[in-house]
Amino acid sequence: MATQEKKGTIIFDLDDTLFDASALKEDIFKLLASSGISLSLVRSSYKKVRNQFPIYRIENHIKLLEQENGINISKDIQHHLHHFDRSPYVKQATKELLSELAIEYNIWLLTLGDQMTQMKKITDTDLVKHFDDGRIIITEKAKEKELAKISLFGKVFFVNDKLLETQTIAKHYPDVTCILVGNHNLRNRKNIFVISSIQYIKNILS
Ligand SMILES: [Mg+2]
Image (cartoon, rainbow, N blue to C red; front, side, top):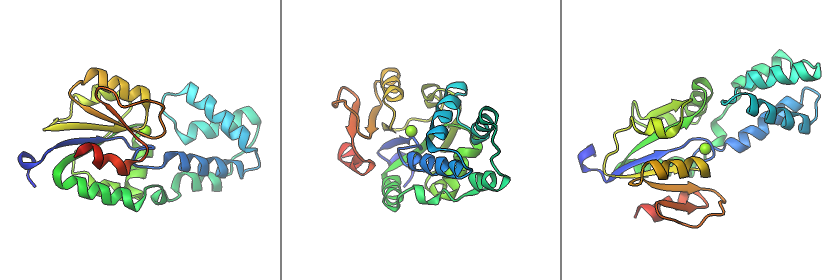
């Protein structure tokens, strides 16, 4: 369907919207802990690393764990961390939903993070096939700035799991309908709708 015949535009976030980043994080933590440290140490070092760097990179996490605890994360574990398969972290139902939505909407992926880290998630899971060339934006800048570069055709929806980020978009783009996914203690308001699962998106689009 050519753009002029479509209903509009949907911009999706990646982590914890389409991709189960929380589950991946837990599996990474377990793998780091398998080098002989406790899970709670891995978790507390994660918090530190998130405070130090705006974007999470596994290299920084490993370095901090090694420096602060005098341990050595083996090359084997490090290799595994970088290369293990990310494909189980997107549900088949999510891919089917995207295929269905792409018939009537231009769909975009707008994700905050490091190019390599995010690209691996997108390629391992085959999500890359669902977004036409150029409709994937991986950025380390604020999403409201990146959104300005997207050609917003027809009715526009922004789908995301983070409350503050979504509120910022809703404020900067009053004509965009924001859909907040997850267990948020927030009622539907002005241009923000809350859904517990991505599958309910169709109720808002229709
Ligand atoms: Mg997210």
